Image (tube, rainbow, N blue to C red):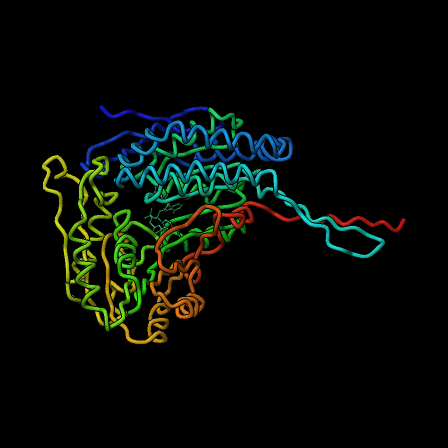
Length: 483
Ligand code: NAP
Ligand code: MG
């Protein structure tokens, strides 16, 4: 019998007012893991009113010292570290990723709370010169009530990536995790409670996007929506939030290029390129799923990437020898499988891995690593985000040609390139229109740095000090000194 969990609103653990629930599944088996509330507009209204009160009466903003906010965030980091094993296993059960990756996620979550705990005491304004007879103060204030809507691929990381800077900035939050992966978000609520976050400051509401999420978007007491997810939902959010001119940060999808130049060190370029597409089952917004390989080394690289993919071991994420888990849901499996079918008609299937043979996993949502060879960047498998372990490889000859190919996409989240030539590396990095360019690596995103998309990959930036801007307003206070 799966657990029936409650959600966290105004410092209390509650069911949905109408009793509605939804099941979250283990994607390795398809079995029900737990039942959580399916929040509706009335529940969202309670959560938003609590967050509004905690923002307006200074429970978290003006009446709490920055030092106190910082201490509470540090306590959250400690609690995350104390619960490292439990949290990682919960994440694996809910979303399927390999356990080693989940430990990495949990460690980064703890660090995010530490990092933004440090920032809580360092947010300051400016005093621009305005002559002898006046003084101007630029002060930073919290945006207020923030709705945080996150996807299922890095459930806990995406939640912390928004929650930690929002809290450091003095905002109050309503977090809505994806319906497929609510469990670590609920644990984060418990951690906030244990750390001493006052009632109303952190609310975690489980539910589905077009009901719970929609109620957040349209609630007049919400000042800001920070969203990570698909482009289509991002567009809907921006349109909807325009009605009340809510502030919006969007972290959306990608179809990122990964360029292997002929002089690359293949001992790092091959695993880096492959992990950049197959890591986290390919459910990565910045996956380098368009692989461009210089023609003179093309056959060698194809052979080595195929060998790498063949060694990937699918299985339950809880098994320490597993290197690729199941996709998050049956819907996602079918979507990715649909793209594999499309790929067969428009490109050459160079490699397709094996599904797990363990009968206990027969109900799991596995899609094996798949590599297509193409000669055009116009194919659907080269243009549309697949969000699964599917690589499309395209040969190129010149640097100018590959820069044009890399930029020939509506997205601009990330790019990776592999070469030993520093001029070639930097020339290419500067020419690519994307929020991050990795040179001789793929995917690292340390929390101290920056994250966000060019073009249709998003609006705004997260991580580092840049994330704080998303949760702050700036006010000018002008003082006449002449009398
Ligand atoms: P999604 O379908 O857009 O869902 C993301 C979140 O939005 C979920 O919590 C979802 O709720 C909610 N939502 C759906 N409809 C909504 C509505 N009408 N109003 C308010 N909220 C709504 O995305 P996904 O399939 O979970 O995630 C995959 C996508 O996320 C990919 O496109 C990927 O590239 C992107 N992503 C981007 C980044 C980045 O940093 N740029 C990072 C990770 C993922 P329900 O799930 O409960 O319906
Ligand atoms: Mg689940």
